[in-house]
Amino acid sequence: MAILRSVNVGLPKDVVWRGRTVHTGIGKSPVDGAAMVRRLNIDGDGQGDLGGHGGEQRAVFVYQLDSYRYWEKFLGRDDFTLGQFGENFTVDGLPDDEVRIGDRYRIGGALFEVTQPRVTCYRVGIRTGEPRMPALLVQHHRPGFYFRVLQEGEVRAGDDIVKVADGPEPLTVSEVDALLYLPGHARERIAQALRIPALSPGWQGSFRAMLAEPESGTGNAGLVDAAPPPAWTGFRPLRVTAVEAESSTIASVRLADPGGAPLPAALPGQFLTVRVGAGLVRSYSLSGPPGAAEYRISVKREPHGRASGYLHTHVHPGDTVQAAAPRGTFVLRPGPAPVLLVSGGVGATPVMAMLHALAAGKSPREVWWLQAARDDAERPFRAEAAALLAELPRAHSCVVLSRPGPDDRDFDAPGRLTADLLRTLRLPAGADAYLCGPAAFLTDVAAALTGLGARVHTEIFGARPGLTPGIGAAPSRPPHPPAAGAAGAARAAGAAAPAGAAAPAGAAAGPPVSFARSDLTVPWPDGAGSLLDLAEACDVPVRWSCRAGVCHTCESGLLAGDVDYTTEPVDPPAAGNVLICSARPRGPVVLDL
Image (cartoon, rainbow, N blue to C red; front, top):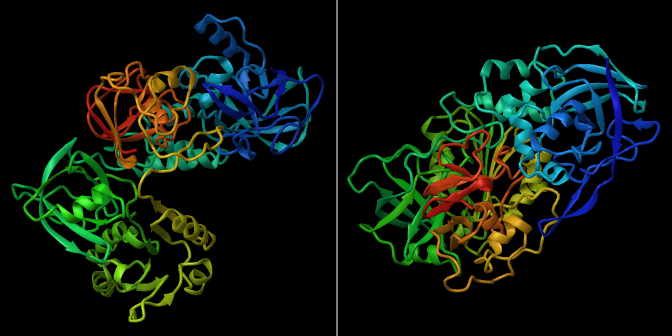
């Protein structure tokens, strides 16, 4: 019979890690005597990052003494103490390759149900002093698992663990873990996992996303949004065929193959990355009909925008620009649900491509065009949108102008797209809402539409928000070249580069690394650990969790160039993408960061 050997708890605290402060509850210590297990936690326990840990589905984490012995031998260690892996219950028995998702156990006065394997993150590496641990737990099929609490009660070390019910499908913890994180992703086994009611909603969502992708797809749709692989690698020349004004601040640039061949079709909502002028690299949404022989990008001239200014004033028909293949996961999804195309200012560009796609297919879906602009002069696509909406049998439109001019007449309301205004429109329930516009616009409108029951999809111009779990947000600083040695120091100590600091001449001789969304190109520094380390040293916003090539949170678009991996990813990224946490440039690279 399995036995509970230790009950471990610990409240979140600040831990210094690589020069940064991490707020984490990974540190657990054994409890003397009885401990009360409640629906969300054990008394005296807590989690620092509730986005990735804790909650009803992850109330109690379980790890096995047999795995302790395995890791001590594998790593040549003899210094592990109970709670070392962040577990609440250290148990004798209950191996990951025997316990099923949905199994139920009684321990002391409490009743538990197995909901999911552990989701590994960098903090288990902090606790064990082994940065590779997030990947090793997956690769060696020893993740551990979570309990949901079905009946609250007291437990104590020495309690018997009595199995009271089997999970409905013969899928063990290690098998389910491998289905998500390891190559293979057998679709019939994923479908089997989805028949387990006890499987946590997060894992169900990941598995549904994997089944929704075609078998020919690359990457892991369960961990990151999926898109078809780019139609070509790197940059290729495209010829400018026209430059057209769309509003007082926005111009469209039409691009074609220099030889006259049709260009590969883009998905409605994707963007194109172009290189113009003295190596300026920028991404702009495609606004024309998907599947057209040419591409159309629509560019707002920003007051201090070097690339947008160049495109508005120096690019003419007959010129050539360099372009990477269309990319992006902000795309129109098929299905019968109503569609809300919501934009602010130049954010109309990607949803205009979606409107083209819906009109071309004479879509029977209910379609709403919700557009916000400053005034009629700055409103793009007025006539084009009206013509496309007229082709749809169930189309509606609402245009608001925040500062309408005295002669502006063709709009529905002054002001902004507020929650109160959206409620008056009686928008359809269960709609897919596609939002693009300034950050404040996205925040406010997304919250309002979510409250009305819409499924909200957003596109952000410029750098995306970073994700650094457990680490408090630092004061925002614009991206900058790294301080001398900062990227190498980041690998060892996490030191942040001072704002605006530049490397001294001759300090870095590596290939250029371009962060396209952040308007920054820097040479690869000698001794840098990874592209993630370099991005952090430059204050480029990044997203990461495991830092070991398993979770794919750091997966980013590799617009041009090639990389080598210091540690091979547990499961490769999608074609045209890179896991920046363990990659180094082989030559010049351009990243969608």
